[in-house]
Image (cartoon, rainbow, N blue to C red; front, side, top):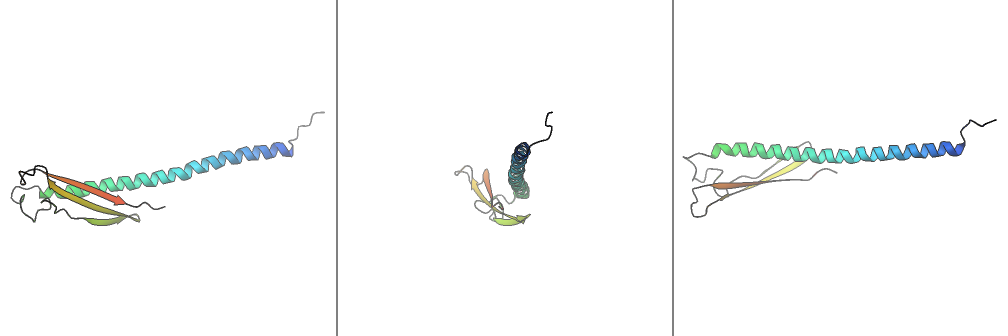
Length: 119
């Protein structure tokens, strides 16, 4: 007569295979959470940059282009910090003339946003 019952060794091997599979899936889900948080921070920084640059569009005016009250005047762009979802974003900008010979001409705005992601 054939023995159809599972031995203890077979059960232990099956449990081990299932545990390794589940452990691998848990590791994938945990690491994907980190990637999602990183992507969320980058998206927030991009939206913050767009918001900041949209505000600067209002300063592109003929009547105040060469005055120090214009935020697009050389070196006059403000820097600030803001916090979203527990992450602090530091925004710094530098405005400089594209053509040093003609300081009243085109200007370049370089905006940098730095943040520290939570662990």
